[in-house]
Length: 232
Image 1 (tube, rainbow, N blue to C red):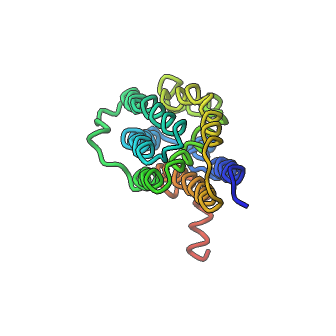
Image 2: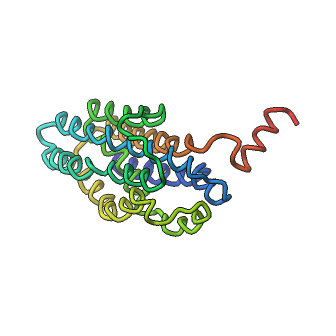
Image 3: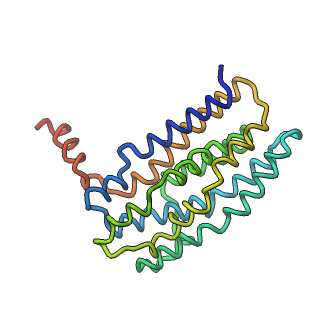
């Protein structure tokens, strides 16, 4: 029977899947990650926040009357997250990218993730926190500072990673807050199944935002896929 624990299991599975075969993390580990790859990731992260946080407000507007705590959390979280895109802009400037990210168009991967959140917000308001359950969990489990040691070869340091590092600090308590708020919401079994489904899909789409920034052919595993596809 689907319930809140079902969604928790989906979130844990999504977090594990994010770290499995992640092209950015693999490229860093293999020493083939570039500044251009990082810039593409920063543009994705900028647009994710610049447009994505608006769906918290949409979800708040669709809350049922009894979901007072959820509504207040959604609005407060929107206000807290709203300007975090400035970190991505700052990081782009720090690595020499002068293009204003707000004047660029979001990638298909970002649009897919943002669109899911907007759909969830109107379809079932608590489901807007499905992606939050995954992202806040990722932030708590990230070892970003350790990985920074592997990118020094391309001249990057902690000062170039304000978006990722600041989130690892700012989100330290957010994961528990998300689950505490969801515990106040009463849903049917069918609705909890939707909650778990949104959580799974959100995790996969968010991972694609990362994977898409490392061109195919860069990783050692890509060579194997190309050989298999060619029949050699």
